[in-house]
Amino acid sequence: RALERVDLTALAERQIGALSGGQLKRTFVARCLAQEAVHLLLDEPFAGVDKASERTITRVLRDLADDGHTIVVSSHDLGALPELADDGILLQRRVLFQGQIAEVLQPDRLALAFGIDIAGGAS
Image (tube, rainbow, N blue to C red; front, side, top):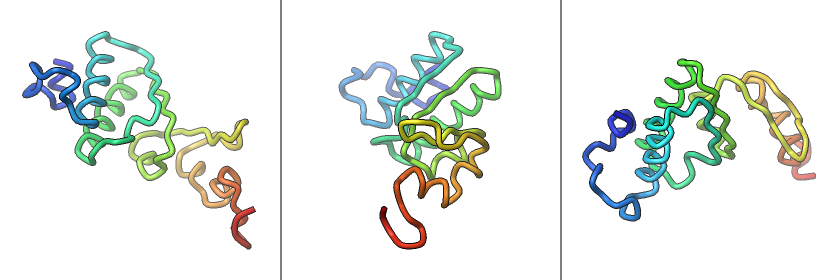
């Protein structure tokens, strides 16, 4: 069932070392599903994956969150966050901002996090 949820049933017999990056990430999510994990901590879940895998992983994670699971994602892929998360924390050695994703992704907040002076270039 876990492989079915991440669209990998056709590859169930394939060795893990023979999987692509996206297939491997989906396999890790399937492992969490099979273990019935309640809390998931994911570091850069979309690094090295294709858009189809990103959509699948996002769908599964949103479903899990909707079912009450705790999902914590560390990501530099800011474009994926609106579909993935409701709330976010902007960090740079300390919490710079915490709130809804739309608020976290405001240009002035991102500029602060990335050390950019919006008015005049890099600081």
